[in-house]
Image 1 (tube, one colour):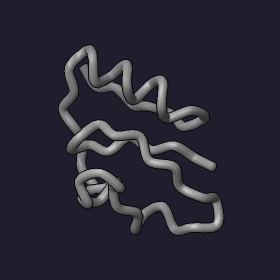
Image 2 (image 1 turned 60 degrees about the horizontal axis):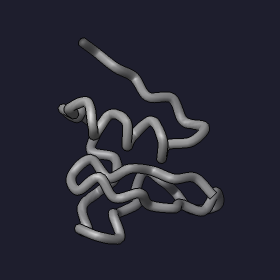
Image 3 (image 1 turned 120 degrees about the vertical axis):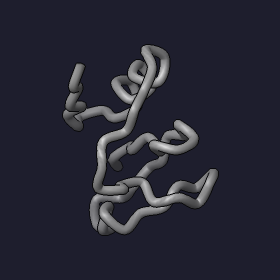
Length: 62
């Protein structure tokens, strides 16, 4: 199971490995988890992404 943080509401979403993650939607707000563009985050939201996106790289542009 992979966890992806929603770029809109910061909810952690579990995605099964057999499912196409590029089409996944957030269970809380219903928005697409992958929007094809960078997401602006503050320090608190960055920590949420780092903790929840276990095993996935987080690219940071400062």
